[in-house]
Image 1 (tube, rainbow, N blue to C red):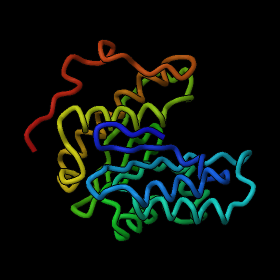
Image 2: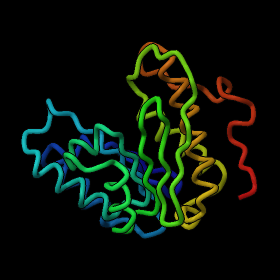
Image 3: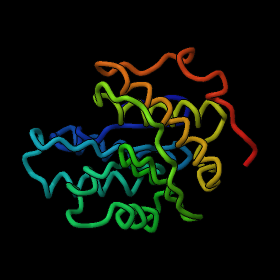
Image 4: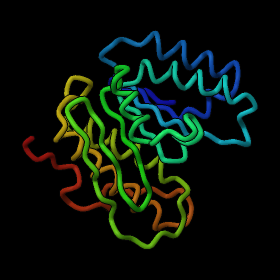
Amino acid sequence: LHADGGEVGHRTLGLALEPMASTLVGYLQSLPNDTMVMIDPNWRAGVITDRAAYVRRVDEACRRADVVKVSNDDTEYLAPGVDPLVYARALTSGGVALVLVTCGADGTWVITAAGEQLVPAQHIEVADTIGAGDSFCGGFLAWWRGNGFGVAELDDHARVVQAARAAQAVSAFTVTQVGANPPRRDQLAADWGACSPS
């Protein structure tokens, strides 16, 4: 869990363990509305002992989230048999401003109330997928906050698509490395942080 400059992000593995789970949900619910919250339901079967309780905690956390990043694997665990895009649309209907559905080599679906768009993945040689999700979320937040955006701008579909592309670039670098080794800024393209007019 981290909080910096008006944003909070966390991987929800902590929602599998008490008393951490109750503490995290209570903390999220206490945050002011202008604090941007991003959640990555990074489930791990070996840690979760009560699936129903975990799913309930994720649902509670998502009700306070502004951005939710989910993978195909996440949605299959959280809502078995439900298409990931259907799951994402349900989150936006429930108040989440942006859902990012990562689909591995197929790319990332950007889902907002204003529309849906698939951002194709880069063609790369994968060395190790450890850290892919963390670096994606970190890349998204770094690009978003680096351009001065917050909660209010999440309704700009074109901007969030740009942010998703930037996040994919960070994640793509990470998976070409052995171990969870995200890039330094100078290892990304010179224009990585640029924001085109929406």
